[in-house]
Figure (tube, rainbow, N blue to C red):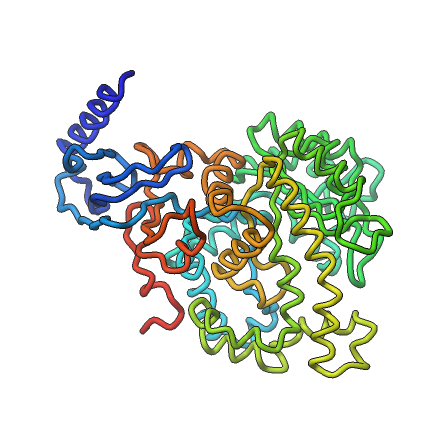
Length: 506
């Protein structure tokens, strides 16, 4: 089909839509005029374009040939895009939305008004930094419904968490409650079965079938021997995860593996998973420095050869380290994404609970004052942080399938703040050697393709959902484009950043 025919077809679609009567309560039509489109399927930007949105979807794109035809019978809101860039909304493919960062469920119950204010703000904070789509990697339909029931939220999907019974992360939940907290747990043939649990409901095939019926778009499983006080946790057998992958692929679901060590990522490659859901900072060897060893390069080369998706999640390590940073809670950026009363609570002795838990695991904690302890913690984290950055740079240099995910929050830490944590992750990725264009692609089309969402989101194209960002700068050239977003478009609804900040007038 010629370019002229394509343009004529798009114009006809828009014109036919214009003849339809407006449905009761239908979304107001939106036109973004004279804008430069930056979309990852394009080799170059499309200047002076008009984009028409009807009923939450892009129905026409024209460039240099006059404005797009109206999409419906109602009024049309026009945004002047002169000098601005229109790009797909960002996708964070690794979040956890079941808990408030830095608070336990018991603490939420003790401070209900504070918790309610924080829950109302959290989805707005993701939107503030351009994240119009989130993927919760360990959730259920019930948890997802609670999240979406809090008002304005990004589009959110979930993965079912197929954890090995009594392994990570089930080990953090006391028995017997842990067996209800992760309904998609795996039970291997040789494992004992707790009372009241049916083994047949927890085979790989059975848990995948349940996830798919529940509406999950992916499967998340785990290979983690433990850390901190929890060591020698059970890990799944290779045959089990291969069976899980086979069942998931038959159901059209990609499989992600929690894996941050060379052992775990080598296991994931053997099992045939689609995405390794973490960077590589545990190297399982006696190496004392951050230089890539032959063993690490072998794993990374396997990732490249297999074209496995790879989420660096560099902010995970900073989310722990920065609990010991005396200046962290004074960062003015936090006031944009966290309610003032929550920030005040984090500074309280009760709000420092997870800092104290981590400090107890440090042999030097009782011997050092605050500044000395901070310096020691920063030194302890320096090597794994550098290792993760170098592994990420290696895959970036050789064309690896990098996917943008933050693991917000990676633990019960306040140092992975919603939305802002994504901005932090971008800065870490750039420092590791990724270009702005690589980061932009990883957070848009690459994520959409990896999670089978590319028909809906990830590009600025006719037919796609209108999850878009209007930016002052070209995101393929600078990540600073996301530091001052002009407008966020969520399903055709235009959002102003001033509506989203935690400091807005209630």
